[in-house]
Image (cartoon, rainbow, N blue to C red; front, top):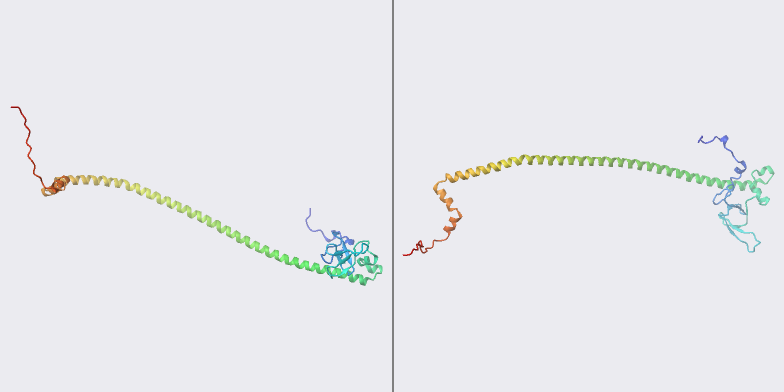
Amino acid sequence: MNNEDPDESEIIIDEAKASKLWIHCNCCFEHYVDQQSMLFLLACQHVICEKCVTASLGRIPGDAPTYTCPICRKNVRGRQVNNALPTNLKDMFHPEPWRDGLPHDLIDAFQKANISSMDTHIAKKEKEELKLDKDIQLARTLCQKHYLEGHRLRMARKQLEFRARKISHIVKIRREEAQRRLTQRRRAESPKQTDCILQGTKNSHSRSGSAVSYLPSETRARSHLSDPETKAALQYPAIASFVHHRNNSFVL
């Protein structure tokens, strides 16, 4: 299936419909050919749809309604635009009035005024569309810029997360290495300390024995005086008491 636009020769144009495209509501610019709502031709030469015009009933039921034109604000009579229009009013919408010998000056002025109104509306919409296109382009540029900035920030965040994990891993390895070295050092120092303690105990015993055996008399006396019982005996003065003889009981 070909999705490309068809050529101009393949486009079917409804000439009858195209000749009526200038008929529109002068207020909301709704086209007559769309047949979305009724259009009224007012006596002030404005074409207004039923949604934009304000109708007022006459004083008696037989009176024709009066319409308030939203363009010129006049209270005027109006007729619905259809095939039932009177001939003099229907001729205002004739596509080629010069062919039928109609007073085309008045008709051309009416149709050109409506065409000019439509052209002004189209030009206004084109400006709005151009402005919207520029706003969309600006929004697209800003979105692309923000997207690139967000992508750069995401990459920077991933790099920082990877660096943080790497630093945490290095710190963990260093702590484990320091703990292992400390454990090895303690294990290496514990036999030496035991040997030193045992060697110190033997040396203290040997030194104490030799000191006692080879101490001079004065030193021995001093060491004897340093005994707690000796100190306690010397602390209090001697008290004289009775002499207790041995009890040798016998029978004479």
